[in-house]
Image (cartoon, rainbow over all chains, first blue to last red):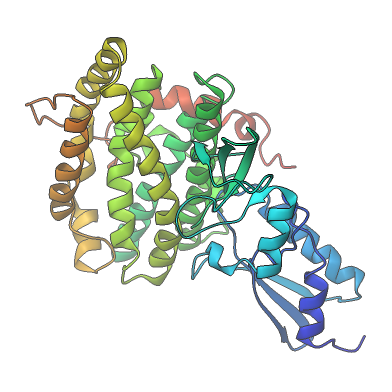
Length: 153
Length: 252
């Protein structure tokens, strides 16, 4: 096949959902660090969110499958841990989708700006750890709904 | 020798996170409340993730096509280099959290310094890990204060835990040839300097927790050098390594 340019490949990867939070893509999450051709091999650099994140191997498989489906034959996935992943790399599109899905996006103040359900600012932390390593468990004191907050790291 | 010292240093880092990660994971499904259960499982997960990076680097240095899994599952007690404190059984929740706090305070401080290591691989693993250690320390410190300064029952349990664990904390700062070689090469910090910082922050937290630090600074040793582990590590490995021992090379 003809070598697709890297912008096209980024577009394909933006269609690969995060396995834990399927409303956002692996590109939105900021874990795809680089896409480059090395001769006829496509090299993709991926960084883990948390070092023990159990979704890492699933993400690698999903990325490889998506690229194969687009006809790329030679693929090399490289794990890159430096610089370490930060929630600053979440895309604006990703943050909006998280909120729509009911997960409060990360906030530099260290807690959610408001309840993703009803918008109230009257919220409290239940636990620093939530349903996945990257989320904390919060509760809204207005609508009384519990919700996940994407931790800022 | 220099390479061997680095290998030993990496085993110490990776065995600490592996052994503590396994111990903490033993709480999964039976912690006192659901939030604590989830927090403990997530902490264990972070520690096992960090283990993959430390032991992965150690295995590369070792060559012979070894992997982090070989080091984790196919070494026996005498080859482990973790601190004795971390292989102790969990006992009650208070003891588990006190052990976690004493280690987190050290781990967070150490990783912060290692992020500036002269060895780029060590620096990048530490820079990744220190972000997670910051969360662990926040939580274990808050829990130690809440329970130490809580009810008469929780206070008693936390004081008992501190009395039991304090003689194991000193091993973190006992320097030997490996530590000296790492400090001389700029790979890791001097442990003596680390100790002063650790003590001042830990003593302040324990004061907030209304707990009394034992006077005696006797320190049990033998874990990080591998000279003499406690009887508990063998039992832990028998469980942790069972599958690879019974079915060598099994994978899924």
